[in-house]
Image 1 (cartoon, rainbow, N blue to C red):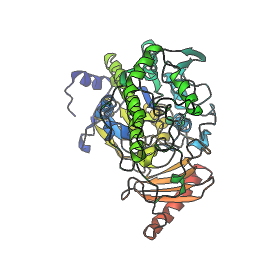
Image 2: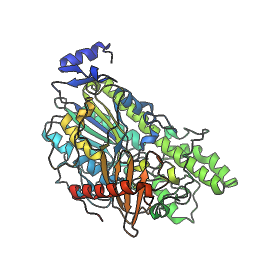
Image 3: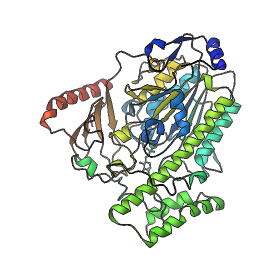
Amino acid sequence: MKLHNPDRRDFIKKTGLGLAGMALGGPAVLIRSRPQRPNILFIMTDDHAAHAISAYGSRINRTPNIDRLAHDGMRFANCFCVNSICAPSRASMLTGLYSHAHGVIDNRTRLDSSKPMFPQLLRRAGYETALVGKWHLKTDPTGFDYWNVLPGQGMYYNPDFIEMGERKPYTGYATDVTTDIALDWLERRDRRRPFCLLLHHKAPHRNWMPGPKQLHLYRDRPIPEPPNLFDDYTGRGPAAHMTKMTIAEHMYPAYDLKLPLDPANEQDAQYWQRMFGRLNDQQRQQWEAAYRQENEQYLKHPPTGKERVRFFYQRYIKDYLRCVASVDENVGRVLDFLDEKELAENTLVVYSSDQGFFLGEHGWYDKRFMYEESLRVPLLMRWPGVIGAGAMEHSMVLNVDFAPTILEAAGARIPRSMHGRSFLAMLQGRRLQDWRTAMYYHYYEFPNEHGVRPHYGIRTERYKLIRFYGDIDAWELFDLEKDPQEMRSVHAHPDYAGIRDRLTAQLYAMQKTLGDRGE
Ligand code: SGN
Ligand code: CA
């Protein structure tokens, strides 16, 4: 790395950073010798899959602002969640614990606020803390000097927020409004203390309503389809066959696909009215202008068979990516703000999502499964002077590691009870000798609207073993090197008997160590 920027050189002198890592090869890494406590800006989105970020090699969109974090910081190629659903993931990030230990095993259970959580620990250590946007943990947020959150899942248009217990309506698009509130708090914050801001977007969660500025994006541009859009689930056990999350069969025409409303479809009408009812006249006009022509075409010549699925996929993915584009634009606003206020140098910026998402792979939307698209979460971290620009990390990190890592970066104590482990050393370009080479996963919510069976499993660098339970009892084993799309379970294959037995024993051992029940 060339230190051609005089401001940067000054900064390094000022903060007592030593130059190290030149001998490591690859991007040079600057290691702090006397760390100054960084500000923490944790941007999180809802259901943003890594494969819809260009820094992760997306085939379907560009995210130039999110990519700035990868360009100037570190991209984690193998970051996974431990239970691919919203509330449990959020609780894991806050507490550093697996679901069974923090208690939020599904979206229905409440968070036990007495568990230590990193924002509250930072606050005790002298940070000013704030939370803006999606929360979804039912109980009021604790450990924040300021909080302003969306009730439940929140609304895309003209959303209500709950500011420190008081419900207030806002005008505008959720991603813009959430960013406005966050920037406003940054302006007003106590400058004598480092800050920790959790900026948590609703987007790009279902029902994928684009903002007014993005309504025409991708208009005449078809988005490439995943190769397994027409997966018929042969080669998998019963769980994949039993889902209710296919683009072909399980989307509401109006609510999900923005097709003209059929009042006879009462459920769809009710869902859609709840969302569309929020728009003001001007927003409605913009909205209708965006979908009108294509909808008229659709009604005149409704596609059938595979063409119908293709049309639905285009509708779904374009709206999803439009929501992502607004997130990207707003990430740019926040990064520009940090630059303008000269905060960028001493702020650790984290970008992640509560889980991954299926973007048509296996014919699906939604998440929940331990399959790759849903298990993997994006993780980008920028901390100038500590993380080398353009760095990439392949070690397996988990969302339960976020809390201990952030606490260590802030020089705060990490509670021993946390399951996760700090990977701060990786940010500094150092290897952690005894880092994990396998991870444990457990998804519990059942019954659920997408018919995904509860399951637990283990993923190593090469293999994934899953056991589905509930009203079924089925195992799957994937060789991710030979079958990265997880199309063919080799659980019963004689060549894999040894691996299967070894992984089964390892899975049960991990379950025991973590203290999780089987089913
Ligand atoms: C809602 C969605 C589901 C989604 C869950 C969980 N349905 O219930 O499709 O799986 O949230 O998402 S909707 O009809 O209300 O849009 S999570 O990210 O909050 O866990
Ligand atoms: Ca989510």
